[in-house]
Image (cartoon, rainbow, N blue to C red; front, top):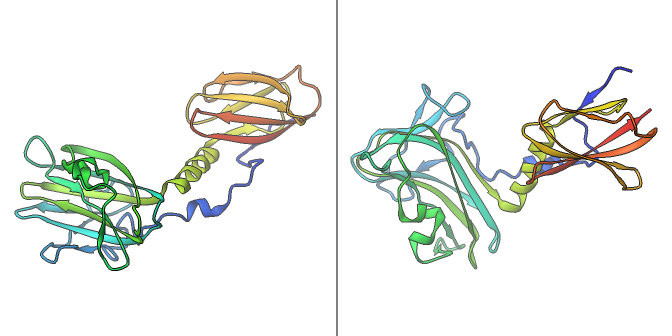
Length: 261
């Protein structure tokens, strides 16, 4: 019988995992708004760049900078939860660093700053009081911090300083860490393909090396194999019936239902 390859999962993963991005227009594909210059009033808005982007058609950036500037977007958060900010950037500065950095802060309902730590060098959302390294190719930066007591919102803010040249950013993301974990698993799940009619072999296509386990419907492990994408696992000795196949890459684990006819 012809093998049928499918993306279908035994475990239904809700679509809400993909709706937890807190930013609007994170990749600047619709222009700048709701990003804006600031939060300091003297800051100027970045230009929308149509000639270079990490993904899509547009990014944002500054060609040359003579005074500290920046832009931001405010999002709602919950005190006590951990949030993850990530983005892609490229640009040059003084030969050592880019003269740019993430400088984001939690705030309370009155607009007061809520620091998770008073020391900037310990605050990943303030780039640990350092600057991003120079990057001539698109480079990803990720930071996470817990929202302190009374925090209700977050200024996702970025600063660029005098000396920065052709600095660009793209594909920002802000997510609650617990939602990000679900999203990562969901992304891994969508990359897995295998034949659901086992026949004499189970062939798995996956993004990287992983452990594939086969269980009977009663939960008994009958096969455990470390495989690369496209490897075939011999299933000729399995009895007819339903099986559960798990694929585990060490950080995410997904399941499939398979049948031996």
